[in-house]
Image (tube, rainbow, N blue to C red; front, side, top):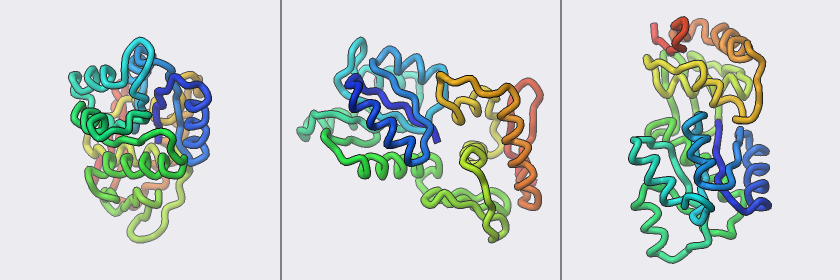
Length: 221
């Protein structure tokens, strides 16, 4: 699970980043609207946490740009603008949720997780592919009713692939989900995680197919 935090207040931005990381998220941090757009175009995110008032490009302008490009990434606005009219405007412009500063980290994490579950599960709290059942609420996976033990990155890979069964996900897209933007993962790290996940999926009816030079598809046999 990967999030982008867009906040020009250095202390708050680092605090939100740290809180999400402690909750199991991979997090990138942008300090202005232009940097945020660059990161969204260069990487893959499950959720964006977005300040309203930003240097270079406002939060609303950022949302307008994304939605004009048909990018439906879930967005939570974090802002001191707590009036009803402001909340309505943010939601009407394309935000999915709204959190007024100051807020408790526990509430922020709960909202982020809930938004992620709705987006990943298309409105449900679970995914089912073959004999696999993925409980998005508890981050648990079963295979034919039996618990399937996965590492955090194996789980994130499986959710990404199971959210779009039969659809191609590129290597760069999967790497973007697993690592912060400013890190350099080992060249074969994705292949290692995929190999481990493939072994654990044996008997589930779901297989990860490699399209050489293109990416990966989760097929149900």
